[in-house]
Amino acid sequence: MLRLDQKLANIRSGRYTRSDFIIADAKDSDMGSGVSGTGFLRGADGRPGRRRTRDEFIEAIEAVVKQDIVDIMLLSASNLDLLHERGTFKGSAVKPAIRANETTDCWGGVRHNRYVQTMSLPFRTAYLPQVMYGTETPQPGAPITGTDLGLYSVTFNNDLDADVRSLEAFADFRRDAAANGFKYFYEVFNPNVPTDLAPEALGEFMNDCILRSLAGVSKANRPEFLKIVYNGPKALEELAGFDSTLVVGVLGGGVGTTRDTFELVAQAERYGARVALFGRKINLAEDPLAMVSLMRQVADGAVTPEEGVRAYHGELQKGGFVPTRSLDEDRAITEAPLKSAGMLKAA
Image (tube, rainbow, N blue to C red; front, side, top):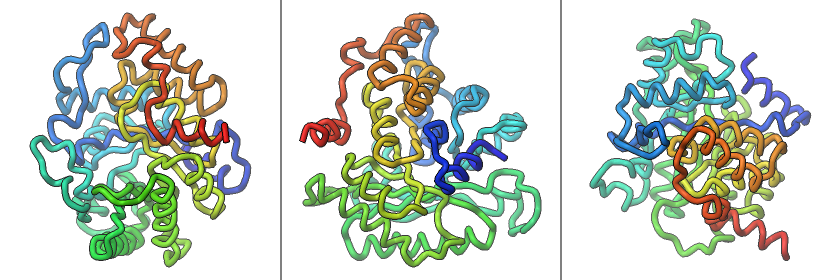
């Protein structure tokens, strides 16, 4: 049994402990970008240099898999093919997953684009039989040569036509997934165009959209877990506490400070999430392996977010890396939803 399967079993059976908190590395940035999706190649001192090539990006992914701390590695289908050719997942406890669709609001990494200025449109490239079996048609019962797990994302914009279009595409995907025996986790983005919703109202709107979009989905076709924006402790606690059958996870969002990264892990766990799926917060770190290691320690409760930042800078110093920010700058919480937890606690 893969580590992910055991952790999900523990969470669903009510035997959750902090060691069951799931960490995923989202290395699927090429699905919304081109050259800019791979991050920077860093020098011996950790300073950013030129963009990574695809081959160098593959090597960076492989290093995280071999570290054997993350539970899921999220990839494009094309990069999963290359990693399987290299034998990266052979004997590994890390579960590979693919991005099964790429809504147009994910295309922000395309240079000079105007796509993200309009409401999200559903779109998907990955062909599930190819992803699973390497064939043009479903092969039920055949060995899985790729993966049987993927991410499906939806963006709700509080617009009737746009949201119905997204829900219809989600229904089409579920039928396709069921026909192939493909499992998925469900990513739900906040609106990608401006709305008139206040922060608290936005959290309530998103919670209702998530629950409404799953209410008509039978147990066999429901997601393995959720991947959502952290809209603050109140919204997360409400969603996580509403339905015990839903495993809630949070996405990482922007790069932020190192304190933002560790604070998000800690607050997510504290308020009911059981999964953290971070992309840029890992990929663009000075030392991604040290970042992943300390994320695990924060999730386990072995160190506080504040202690984690100090430990991370200690690792950078030992490795001879030049930090992007000073220790004092990196200890600051800069992301608004994370600050709201302190205000809630004070109240």
